Amino acid sequence: MGYCPHCGSKVYPDEIFCVNCGENLPNNIADRLFTKKWHFKHFLIPLTLLVIMVGLSIVIYTASRLQINSAKAHYFNAEEALLLSDYELANEQVKKAIESYPAFSEARLLHQFTNFSVETLDSLSDIDTEQDQLQLILQAKNELTHYSGESAIQFQEQLMNKQTEIQLSMVKSKLEANPPIDDLPALLWEADSIQDPEAYDLVRSIRDQLITHSADQAYAYLDQNQFTLAQSMVENGLYYLPNDEKLTSLLSSIEKEKIAFEMAQEERLEQAFSQYEAEQEVNENDALDEVSIEFEIDSRGHLVVFGEITSVATIPIHAVLIHYTIFDADHSELESNEIFIYPETLYPGEIGQFDHIHFDDQIIEEADDVQITSITWLLN
Image (cartoon, rainbow, N blue to C red; front, top):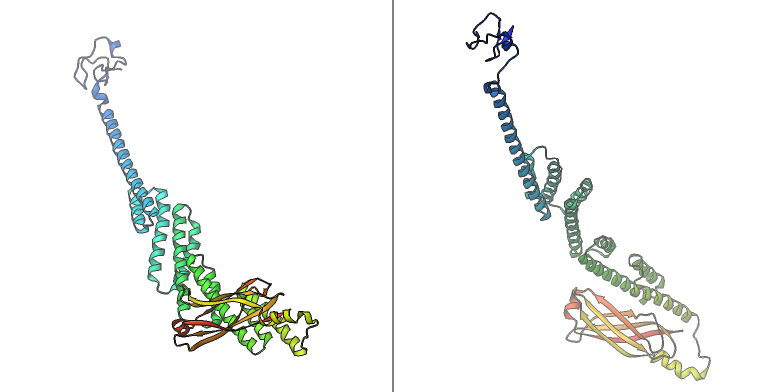
């Protein structure tokens, strides 16, 4: 058996024509053995299939690249929006990136963050009470630990700024309600925990009120010679305001006045030497000079009485107590007060200072003049 050299079909030795294509067969039987002529039509179908496959591959590849490029463009827009803190836009863009290219793993991770950010901000705007807003912020900051990168850091800073804003608002509201003095220590700690320049002003205002209250109570006890209660009041103020110069100086003055009072009860001191009589007269009666006192309304609307005094004594003097009176425009007395100067001990030629803050609205509005009515001090 051989093959038709024209179409390649099988033929028998006694056949003259190919039964398949009708062509004459070679007379030489050897020409019929494995002799096949090449015809283009033999390869037309495979070639066509190959062209179709290549074309489809190109179309699929092109479409895939277009999807990837579109997804990358949306992803880039989302990152740009995050830098501007536009979380709504970022969330929309990253959704489009995932729709364009579902296998975009980075976009899916970013979508988790943008979705979390949008939901957090929406929840904050829907909550009415500041306490609940603070609770939500603390929860959100805890969940932010699962995210990293510049956007997460930026969002955390935004939450911290919102937290500071809410905390300041809460402290201000409590202060505007004129809380009792017993509530001020808690407010002081609350304000002191806020890391913001505006909070520092609130802390200073609360400190001034606590110092003034402690000093006023101590002076009231001193007027009744209740030195132990006066000391306790000042020590209570120092518990909340440690190392405060005015309270520390006041405590020292109270201790010295207590000692002086107890000694005065026991005995009267007589001058041992006549040559010191004149000097003691000065030290006891004219130990101070260049006394000045004035008042002003500070930036917080409080009335501040302040002044200076110079020692002309020949020995150190202690517990210098200034008695002063505030008058209105008709020279009617509005308020009388007394205050120790600081430093507590004045050496010859040394200048002492004193100041006191008044919070009473009537005194602040009507004060027209302030005068020193008397000064007392102790000698060694």
